[in-house]
Amino acid sequence: MTFGLIAIAELGDKTQLSAITLAAKYESPYFVFIGAILALGLISLIGVLIGTKLCEICKSHYRLNQFV
Image 1 (cartoon, rainbow, N blue to C red):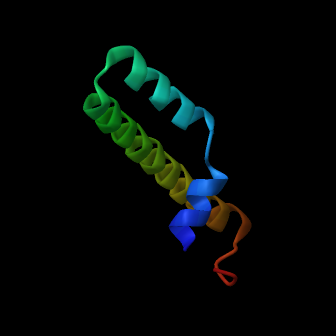
Image 2 (image 1 turned 90 degrees about the vertical axis):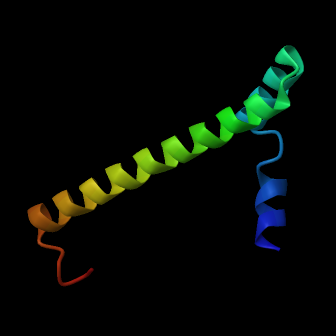
């Protein structure tokens, strides 16, 4: 259910349109799929690392340890 709702909500976003365009232009859907998966994984990893670092900074700077 959750997957379906997210898929409908994200239908037609810039990433999906870019993947469709690249797959049509280069006629290589497998490479486009692999590239899109790697890009999503990398950007998610960067977000997690930045979020972790920001949490550490906020905890030490604002003494939020009692809340987390």
